[in-house]
Image 1 (cartoon, one colour):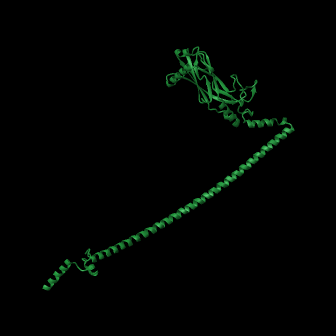
Image 2 (spheres, one colour):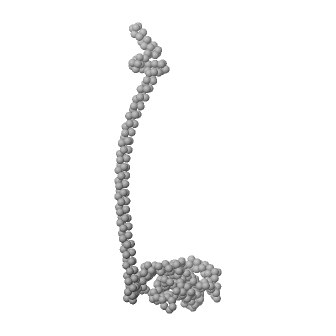
Image 3 (cartoon, one colour):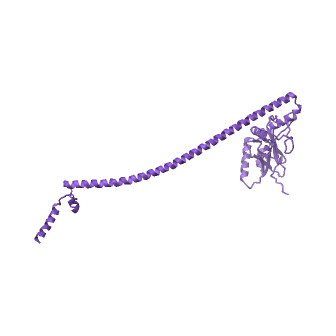
Amino acid sequence: MAQPMPYAVEVSPDSALQFTISRDPSPNADGDGASRCVMTIRHPGLTKLHLAFKVKTTQPRRYLVRPNQGIVAPGSTETVSILLVEKDRQVLWSTFDRLGQSALDHSKDKFLVQSCEVSDEFSSQFRNEQRGEGGQYKKELAEALTEMWNSVTSRTSVPLFNKKLHVRHVVETGIAGGGAADAETVASAGSGVATGLPATLQEGLDKRGNAEKMSSEQLFDEVASLRRKYDELVAFSVNLTAERDILNNTLEQTKRDLNREMATRTALEKQGLRVSRSQDTRSNKSGGGASAKTLLIAVVVSFLLAVRATNSGSIGMLKNVPVLGGMLGFKCCSGHKHKHGAKDSAKGEL
């Protein structure tokens, strides 16, 4: 058997905190209609030192805890009030109204109660202290407690007690005692009572159970109302079917247009590729012919210019060409003539 921890507090309730939710909450003992739960923290008296406690939650914006920390003397108790914020109460009721009690049965909200021993010097600050609304300490003592907890959680040598509690959200199903909520009449699984059903379905079942008590006129009005709702539902279904068909036709037409556009674009791309290739081939051929003709014309023009310059005496390059000069009718230069004359005189002497 585990040894009791002298720094551990006793928490009541022991395992879960229950919050009762109603559509229109009646004023409670505090004068408001809020959903709240009371937790009791007790010092078991296993040590003569005072115990400090702190209450944490996984949903700090959903619950208001007063006080969320404090000091407990040996053998004494501390009452902690936990308030469910009105905005979240309405959200939870709306969830129940749409989905039933089963949607609230698996709440992930949790609370954690921590406690540790504090020295007599530290606890002496809180003795005979007059606390304000909700059991809150004045600002200086609250800051001292917060600083102490920051120091304790940062050191692993200080022993801490941790107590986890789950949260249950239940919906009241009856009003008793002049408007006080009867928290014990909670919907339970497998009970056979339609308390866990959505409010609209529950209302229909109530009307069905009261049909025997209705007069003929009331029954006629009820049948007429049901007939009218049935006609509205049929018309709504017909409109939905028509809209669905229109959307399907539009989708098919869009698919056909898209396929046609893609086929046209593919054909144009292939045709454009062929045209570009033929144009490149033609340009290459025409470019090669133009270059050869240009070179030939340049050679002929250069030759004619050389002949003209030779006739004018500007240059004598073509005259010195043995065969070409004679064919063109050019006269040899003086040096060339002198060389031929010497050869002729030599032949005469011989």
